[in-house]
Image (tube, rainbow, N blue to C red; front, top):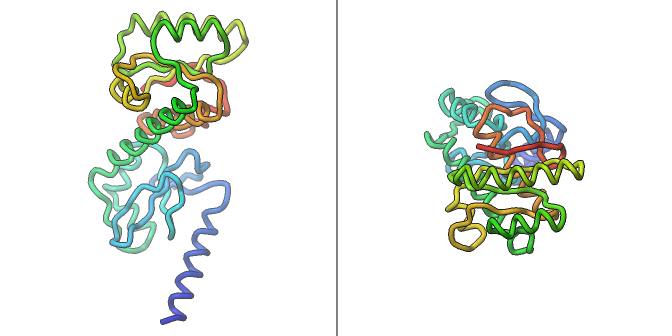
Length: 231
């Protein structure tokens, strides 16, 4: 028994080691992609497929492109069982579970940024912040009125253009989700000042947008200039 456990442990380490390269193979498209453009899934002890967004769960993983439709196809075609070569039960709502988890990561990072003093909320305060100094990103609730958004966006784009900097405009969370993350009522608009957590928020927001679209080849927004993140 001891020998078998050691062999299994060795095999798991080898499988994990095979995932340490610069690219992974999507189980659906069979396309080799950077891990940033994929979602890792692992098998729970009871044989259930679970998302592993942090890529830390033990055992062999299955990688699927960061695209909701690809996750849905992986479930429909039993791609997890085929890749793992064991029975793997993928919940029918796995794609929705992934979406919920990414939303929680976006909201959680926004909450951390707020606690770090990097978030400005309120129309007038955002206007003042734009005049005063650099703003890393402007955020709008997905259900925010177009008029208020347009006024802030026009000013932000003009100021960023004068500074030769990109205007990061993010629209991936609802007003309710933004309000909950920031810890105050009815946050329709917000802004992020530069900081590590602001960059991390943008990476998480880009992943959510990418998951809900078809742009699985997109690279993290923190590494490139971009004009808008909108769901």
